[in-house]
Length: 153
Image 1: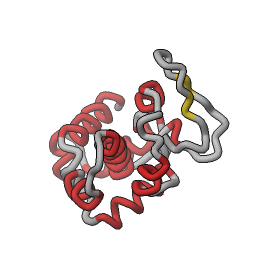
Image 2: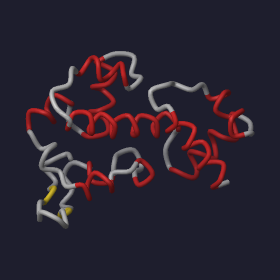
Image 3: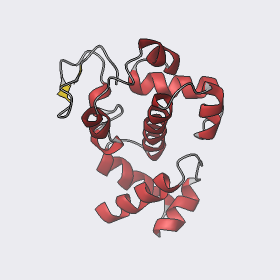
């Protein structure tokens, strides 16, 4: 069953901006849609749509770090139906909007270790270090920078 889920994750990650229909994804991994959906949820703790959203949010964070990006263009590039849908999903996962994240200017301060540990497979609904109110800190081994709870990155 783990191999089935891994193949599904790879297929989703292959083109994260595309909303692959469940039936097409099930054909690609050679099982029924209901079995794939049930197994994915049972194994990972979240739905395939939730996993896809998490991958998109991680891609959005990286693109936001690269500079001044138009949020509507970013949303559409990542496969969201609109800017408002992107903002809604972003807020659900991180507890903050993309504009608020950019305004806090914490993207440049977030250590690589925090970004790497924010893998969708490490999260039941939200990325591991993106949980608001957490007391957790992660230090950047190279620069000694901390990512603390009030910074959603």
